[in-house]
Image 1 (cartoon, helix red, strand yellow):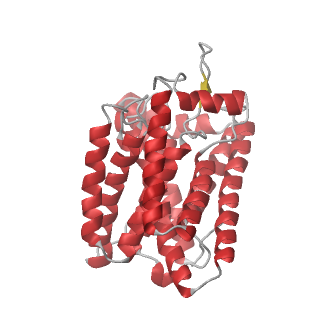
Image 2 (cartoon, one colour):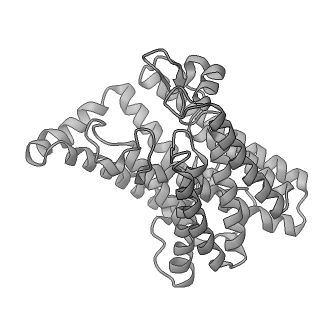
Length: 366
């Protein structure tokens, strides 16, 4: 997944900003934290996704990553376009990377299916969504002028909002996005309704329209960043958050459906974090915390997933948590503390790994 954020192989060091690497890295570290608790039954509320409507801190992580993917597309592709690189070669590079990202996601899901003995294989997922958004946003950055990109973004928000409204309800399993995904993917969605009303996939095909809007917003923010338009970033952050808040009574913030209000609310927060990171890190010289995760995010994300699946397949996952954390911590601190401690240690393990790789100039890309 994280390799998507580095855009094309032609990215030069001069086009890299430490703040973007840091923001990407902190996002990946947050992904590892919320995806790897010791006990899923005992997770602090801010580290959980909203059950349906709503937006917790955890619900900000995936849109922030997709936003950074868009930012990095702008930072990497625009210099190559301006240098006169052949458009056909750039399109092939974008599409090839998108295929590799999605392919890695399919491989990870195959390993998860085998390791956890899941009832069915799930073709959609985080990496698959990133691959689709990377391909579409990359082609838009190559083929469309800024005004046309804004028009596409507006069309996605308005069209997807109309589609959701046409479905008549946003209820779980009964909304039009879930019904569409279940009709296309059948039993291969993330979750089937026990009551037989259908299925739902939080990274399904229909809601990828909203995710693409998030990525395109990142493309436009990356262009502002590249041009030094810092005030525009702050203004866009305020406008987007206000628009998302104003839209939410009609179509609530909802990560599962990636509603237009959710796109704008999280996109505004992402704009603000990008502007803040640029001000503090690139302009004032603050430490780029998270940079080592950001430049080697593919190693952290995919490597941690493969480690998790290997431990599960060997039957070591539960005994490791119980003996190293729960047995002695839970009687003293309750069940939530060891669950969080396990997640923090998991992140620390991979922080050490990527720091070691970065110190030796080893950066994995796909």
